[in-house]
Length: 296
Image (cartoon, rainbow, N blue to C red; front, side, top):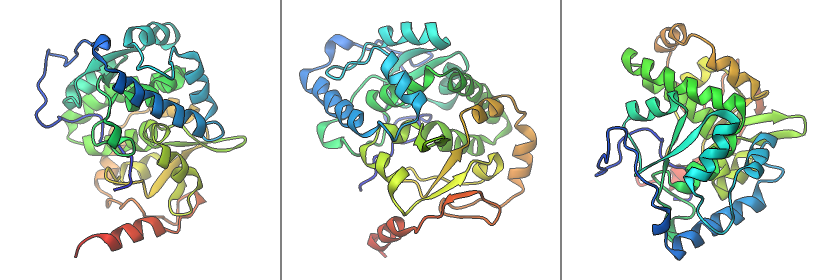
């Protein structure tokens, strides 16, 4: 499989054991091996070459302002000191995926849970579980942006409420199509801001330049109805007209949306509706070819 797509952040990793009530652990920076630092270096340098002109200005600015070195896995405490001064966020180490309620509680208190392990050299282009490169390189630069900082905290607060209402699936789609796989319109064209894209070499190109996927204007109800892929590239990407739209999402009451979405049919990832604002209608060729390879 060619997809670099990580699994959703919240959930319970198979066989994972909670080391504490909030699942946080020591990063254990001194225990990283030279080979693990070398994997970080390979990933960091590859993305640093790819992202100028593809990632949004806010991501590139956050990347520049954080204490991230190309040749070693970053210290979470050093990152947190800079983040906290800028937007009040800290990075906390966890052993892998964590239960939903733990994930939401951390976000609601401006703590971003990051896997402290790094992928193996043979996993550079595909990883089922988010690692330190995805979580830190992918997410931390955007947490330097006040709008994203506010939105992700609001998502954590909203996630706790969505659990109580039994509508977590609909809310998770909002996170997936924004924080993980979102595009934004800048004055100089479409740009990436989603962590699942900026941390992936192949999807950084596919999301913006391939003719296969749809690129559709972001609409909250539309997104809440749309399933997503965790096994391959996305069939549709949703585009913000500016990051300010995330701030509006952080301030709305979701309950009426849940009621309307629950009464509407679920959409498959490649659907294009007559009401969609279409930036680019995809050919669907990539996913059609992948389906052709699947066993009958």
